[in-house]
Image (cartoon, rainbow, N blue to C red; front, side, top):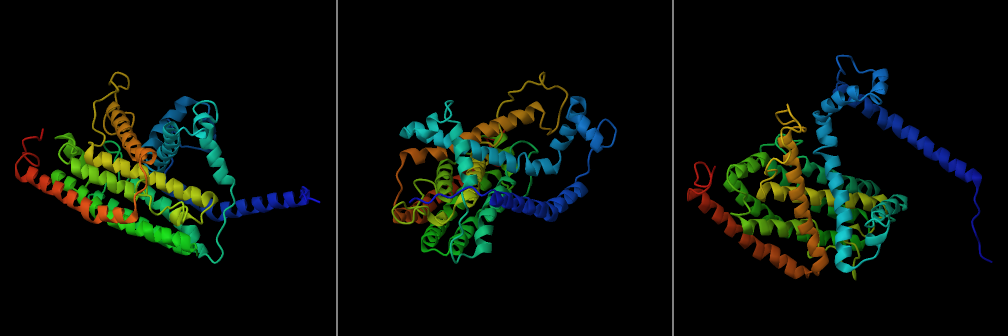
Length: 421
């Protein structure tokens, strides 16, 4: 006789009370102190000369003349830059769009049914269905796992990916952290990823993730040197490590992809290896270790690592745009007559808006190039991968570095060069 579980109302009420208890505890211990810290360091602006009060805040929800000034004020605060644009929310939106486009793109190429038709209109419900599935899945921690490290590594993965985006300028004056050695800082942060992968695989207490972690470590280190040397060619031409300075140097001459095509190619291939994407997805092996160093992940642990991976994809694509495609450079597409009277680096300035649009379009184009190999290319063997990274790409990146030195000392680029406008 088949046994079926019956619904027990008492257990249901107990579960709800247990959930409410933990929400109140977390809000009291974490949420309230955080709210007071934010209010202490972020002064509330006056609205039409009057201090912001709860009553005024409520009237703003129905009165646009009071809402617009505070929105303009908040847009130019550091909190907005870090949390919304060009910070984490912008990168996360890019990641969400990339996931959706990748599924559609591959479905078109490989005739997959779900991503094309679920939800009638271009399969848009598939993305929501995937999100709900991840949220509702149980998080399983392997037996004997190092729990603090197992929980911390996915958060560190997302945080590290978000830290890279904080250094990349998307328009004149629009960067979270404008650092003089910005490119060096980007490579320093990227150096944490293989360490996080290895620690997480070790913390899983399973040989399959650990094998995947070792593979990821070997792969990323093999491509790290050509990755850095290819970017060094750009530094030689621009004469600065500041990412905004590199974009300005290209605006005053020409995009560096025309002078350094080999460096751009090496940087693109190294980015695919850094992202563990096909044909360099060796940490994953369907017949051996299934999903590489994330084999033992489930639920939102898996979701966090995927989010970090796609934010990292955006960061590397944006870095390619900054180094080789002139960053935000492009003609002004919003005429002054539409948004008159604004100058400087404000986000509603037509020049800044045009720069953001060009940067977004270029970055999305590079992301599409990164997605393409997954639909048309097979995975390569690990010995070919290591040989490519340690021998071929290093030689190619050195060749273009000598080309960059020849352009500088030949008087073609650099201060007073023939091609500097």
